[in-house]
View (cartoon, rainbow, N blue to C red):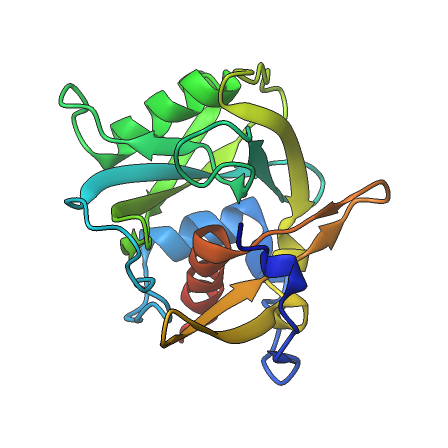
Length: 220
C-alpha cells in the first residue's frame, strides 16, 4: 500500500504568515463566517483514482471551544472500504433523507463519534473538495461545546483526538510533497502533529480542507 510517510518532504510553507491568534477566537470566527470575504480555495480536487460515479458527502470541521480552539479529528478504522486508517473529520456520504449538506455532517458526526447536535453551533460551509475516490465533500465548520460527550463508533473510528487550531492555521507546519504516480505528478500537503505520545499524520483531503480554511481566514 502507498504510505505517504515514506515520501520525502519537498518543502515547507514558512514564507506564508500564520493566522493571528485574535482571528482564531470563537467570536472572530462567528464574525468571519457572518461576513465572509470574497476568496477562492487553493485546493479543490485530487487526481482521480476511482472510476465510480461521484458521490455527495459532508464532513464536520468541529472547533472545540477550549481556552484555545482545537480541531477534533478521528483515526478511521483499518477495515473501512475508503480512506481506511487515515486521519479524517467526522463525516460521510449523504443519505436521501438528509435535508442538506449540514444535515449530513451533523448526522455523520452523531453516528461516528456520538456528537450531539445540541452541542454544535454551525458557522457555515466551505467550497466542496473532491477526493481521488470520487467523493464531493462539503466541509461544514462548527463550534463545539467543550461539554460535548464523545462516544466513538468502534466500527468506524479507531481514535478521537484534538489538535490546536493555531497549529493547523500556521503554514510553517504545512509540508509539501510531489511524486510521480502512475505516470502523473501527484502533489499533496501534510500537517503532522505530535501530541506528546504519538504523531498524527494529517494529510490528503483532510489537510487540503484545512488549507482552504487557512486561506479563508487569511483572505482580505
